[in-house]
Length: 216
Image (cartoon, rainbow, N blue to C red):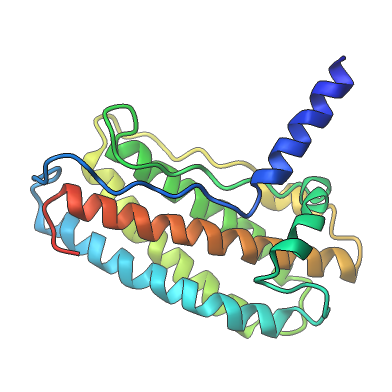
């Protein structure tokens, strides 16, 4: 019975990997969630940086992946690889939702920061095994800069300051990168998931700006 439950959990995780549920637009009354020009500036800076990250992913993928079967936008092929994400220890990205009383601005920003840190750690683990590192190093810099902006916003809205909890993803993945194929698949799946998570960040930032009375 326990074995069946474990298999079911793995299949559920595989089905959701690399896919994200659409984030509904903010439906409440626009107002001032945070009355701080610096916060609004960080929102705009974050929008620019996440666009830069998303724009860089296809070229980064091309520069790092030489396997013809690992295609960034091939949903059918990517579904076949999901079991490898579990075997390699690649965690799913945190879920982002529209702002509500139960999913607060602080929660949203915290999950953004946690998700970006996870992908930073994963990319740092694989970059050590890649021959061409220029693109992925630049991508890591943009993710770092984006996380700085997110953390500034998080600090501004935290009631009680507490560190962002992050899983030890890099250590877990690094120990499983035993050959070129594993490195290629891990890099591919990390970029694929980062692309999906980044699209969620775009929608969440739009959601935050709308709720805070900013024009899109």
